[in-house]
Length: 132
Image 1 (cartoon, rainbow, N blue to C red):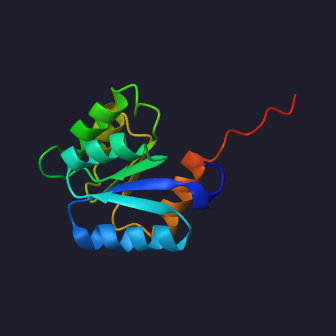
Image 2: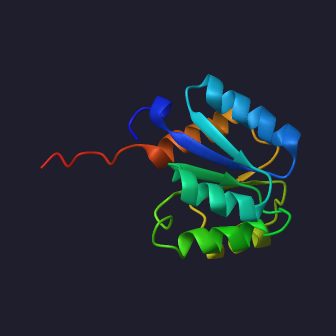
């Protein structure tokens, strides 16, 4: 994991324009990016690629975002992958639903790509060494 250049991000959104904007920014910032347009594909890609972090929308076709998060977090192979919800659903109820499903962070769209990158970096940073 270490540097952002080695970070593999799975970006999941059914809106191609949204995916493209965030994917381009993350890639220009040195991340490797794989994409999925629905929840079922996201789960498959997560198992195939084992990304360092998943960025997922809540409103997805086939399998919705919360169900996809629960499936990822409930599987030993993908349970430790941090999940960032990036969604237009901005209510406290939506945030609670996402947290209850197992997400590690919640961002509301529209969100500056730099804010997403900062969160990706934070969630994929190696643990600080113990100074003792």
